[in-house]
Image (cartoon, rainbow, N blue to C red; front, top):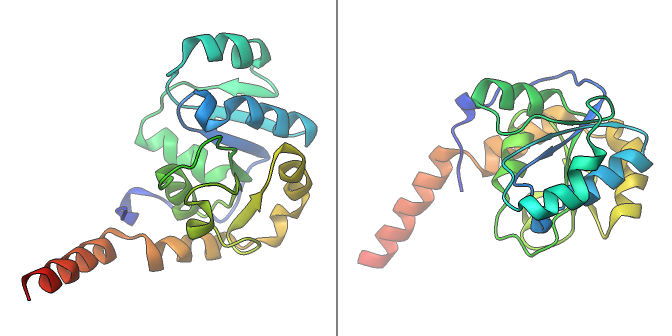
Length: 182
């Protein structure tokens, strides 16, 4: 995957909240994100479509107090940039082997590190201790929240500039096509 970096503003300063950005679905770990934020005594802002309404009602809705847990719903590009770029970190406690994780790359493009469950493609995107933390569960995620200030927001952006920009993706596709026609 490659993203257009011009659509994601780098933010050197963060506000004091964690972010969950994705579908409200058991696979994406919205319930776990709430648990992490509460145990870490941090505000959590959640944004994304409700894909599983029963899950939302059972695990998320009752936790929303518009103070410590805020649900924004689906957001457009301007608000997305602000939310991604001003968060202390994105929480990505996935419960499946996600093949990529576009929201992870978009978040790092804004300079924000990620705390993710170590599943699927996450080890290919996140370099533990450099642009985020890979964890085995809620407890380990909570333990990493105080360490977020050791990560460089500029290093998060550089990761995307070097590995996930649209120009690199296009160049690599062209290289593959050239190999195929030989």
